[in-house]
Image (tube, rainbow, N blue to C red):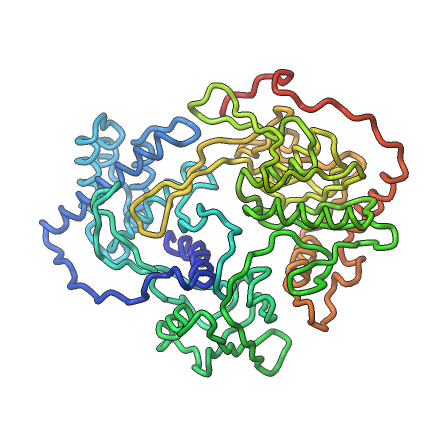
Length: 551
């Protein structure tokens, strides 16, 4: 079960290899080492390595998690999962010493004994026992903790190079060589090309990438690369050629099958330098520019924000500045597909609309006073949006940094919020090294709150009547059914990926295909005609009630 869960996440590793082929280490598959003999001595050694690694990890997580949790409780959760994976009950005589252990030596001895009893089956070999343990620990902490690719904690949005698409079905294989470091005798995992199944299917295409400009789409099936059919027997070699082109300007011919098209298509893509897009409009006017006018005659614009990257504030400021110079009278800012991202860029985006005051505040386990985040105009984003009506669209997919932006705008009364309630994810997380090569443990270390001090995080026991997430204004609630919401989500993916020179007609070319957008447009028109409310003082930290303690 743990491996399936890991495999579903590890497809996220592939885009960094595809986008950044020049920085990928050589894809030389290490020779298979001789299997370690399954003798009592080798079992003891393996159990000892596992126990010491698990203790070090549990200690680090226990010390840094947002809420106090005993190290032994995490260790028990790990062992419960291992025994469950082997369809064995976790004996009380092994559980009790782990719970009662009060020092490293006694805990190590208890874990080593419990692990040795399980033996070294194939499902626990090659550090799979440690991976399954960490998955169980993540589930014990909260839904947002667990093993992730280390790429999640790199700054996204920088200029990068590559093709710009992601494939379904990549997993990792251990190189079975050990290194000493923060975790004793932890293995160094190398990514090995090992697609889980055929056919090779495109999971995602990065907006602004060579693949997007060439017309690649999600769910396209790759059948040939440079005339070489993709088969299970040659998959490793084909993927090596894809990730290690002969030169940075190599033109690669992809043959694809697309749903609804009986004949295969050929796309010629050259890996190149590009900046992933995070700010989108109505339709592309060129390969690198968007048309943002929703109603050109009335000068009403529409801007949609995706994942928040380091470049999002600049991309947004450039778009708004151009629209203002062209006489914009009102703006719809669409955060419905904003899954969040990095904290500082989210604060910078909110600062474009909030002229002064507080953007957010955060709390953590060891800090008695909340950290206050104020309006921040760094050198590259000293732009302040004009004083015109703004409607912000939100929904269940608005998460994290997207909720921070919406809450800051709402609490400072800068715009009308329309749509549906947001997800309620306000966690602050960091990556913890766990000695698994390119994998890290994503750990929740704090929560951010609204400027007003109200809670944003939806906890497991939160009720619908509790404060969490961001609610639309009372006169701007536009609910959708799950089916319609999913349909619009898929339509927008196609709209964003359509090349500027493509002649195909898409559903969102008809504005009526997005009823929330049309409702927001009507609300924006009303706001333009209504008297402007008097400005309010900025949200000041010294006027706020104390934050609730961490639950």
